[in-house]
Length: 231
Ligand code: 6PG
Image (cartoon, rainbow, N blue to C red; front, side, top):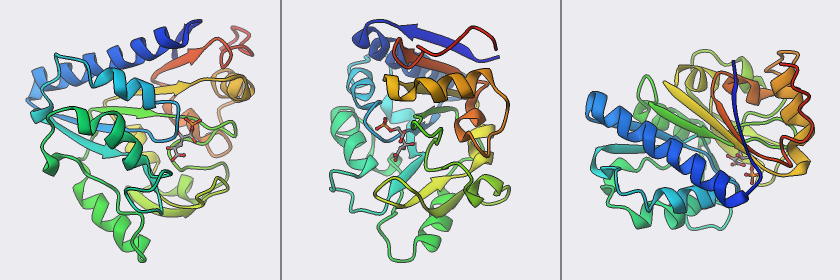
């Protein structure tokens, strides 16, 4: 059953999503002394990461940061998910550099980069934040992609319809294995797909973000605007 948190106030949504991350990270550290944290790229989570950087209860020396996907651009490129997360969060907290695991999607051999990254991933991420595109993609798992059939590899190179097209992405097993997962989506342009994803039918190959239906979804009122309550 998907848990929906709908906020009318954009800053309230940011605070609630950041509070969820803070709570789940500290819960993992309390339970096992560490936290494997997977982060989404794109634009929506950026203010959430800035808010999370202010959370005083997180012991960042116990956190390993991973990425759900990355574009095939240099790490200092404006379109780099790592660049966004570095500016919004990683540069503002005391996380050891060796615990930030960047996807090297800019490497010419993206398949080798995917295989190298797979070796860094834990068998289960403790906390995973995902975004969602208006087409229902999440990470860089786009509707109809062959990567949605991948059951063995944890990271694969893909070419998607959203520029920059060449990317690396985690595969469904990574999302399915995550101990706890959240989706954040805002804006009216995502409302139809949010309703489709939440209210069914279940078809993750057509609506990849349905891989995260078991999680908590943070939505603003615009993105929640087409929900009918039938789910
Ligand atoms: C990416 C993201 C992607 C993102 C969605 C939503 O690299 O593009 O990881 O999955 O979460 O495209 O992007 P916005 O938050 O910018 O709408």
